[in-house]
Length: 177
Image (cartoon, helix red, strand yellow):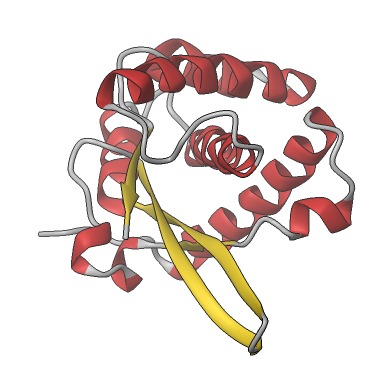
């Protein structure tokens, strides 16, 4: 049976992404206007398309290309990112580690991690379509940046997330649509 976030957990995920967005803005020195230009949304498992569901990851980042014609000589192309939370994987990790893993800090780590990816893609620090080897190196960089970004709000629960999941568990996966 596939488990989904309940309404309280969905609300928590939204709050945590707002917190992570503020932290990412501070870390990367992005003002509110700049960070809002990064077009993304967050969906939970119940609202995902089939290709947005991934085994083995807490979150899956999809990128969609939009080409909207505003004026014949001025096309408005942009990328839109979707953070696809894999509720079942996240809740399973919390259940298995119930004595020490809390949902809120795990979601904060996931949110910050995915936002670091988005910022780096938009800054063209890494190509979304990079090779598998490059993406694996990028994951290591993103883990390090995420840990640095979250230092300002470190807690014992978040430190446990660092210890348990930083290098041994796949936080995110990247997919182009």
